[in-house]
Image (cartoon, rainbow, N blue to C red; front, side):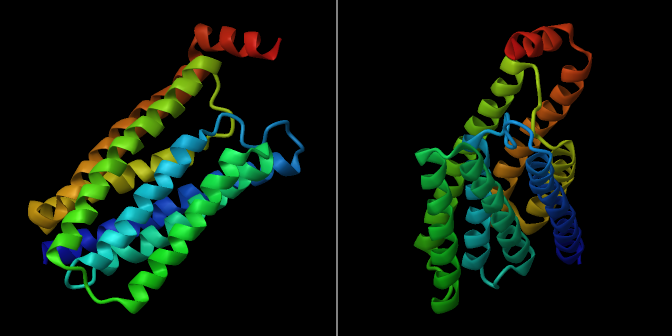
Length: 228
């Protein structure tokens, strides 16, 4: 009963978090329409690609658990698709080979993941262990990616094209994911728990930085210096 309750709650909040991810996409689109210089200003390619990997890894991990975990799989697939849109917009805005390469890699991973899920049965125990190890590695990269985003904000004194709603709603999702991981049991849920704790910690810092940018004299000086 608790599994279904927290699984449903987590799925609902994941769907809500998708609104946040879409809000980030919408912010970029609005900046493009307003012809602002740098529609993806401040957005860390590093951070968004690792965010894509985080969503993608749980999309794949959810398919590796028996029974097939719909609570994990479908919301993460949608989130991965939306983050891929952000990666596309970063490439379009910056026209850099790195952003093109990471966007292309994201598409390849999505296609291969969906294909693999459709044509194969559940993973073996060794396969699940490999997926869990992959999530640990991605969690490390996720922490690094968010630290990179945090350092960009601190360096420039601006949140640029970052969307606060995205961080707020994903933080809610992270909290529910932590609860869901405990209900699943640590044997299967510890990868969810690890990534959600790291994600929540960095989101709290980023949300604080939105306030810091508004009230800090240091942030104001950095913005003025960057504008000169």
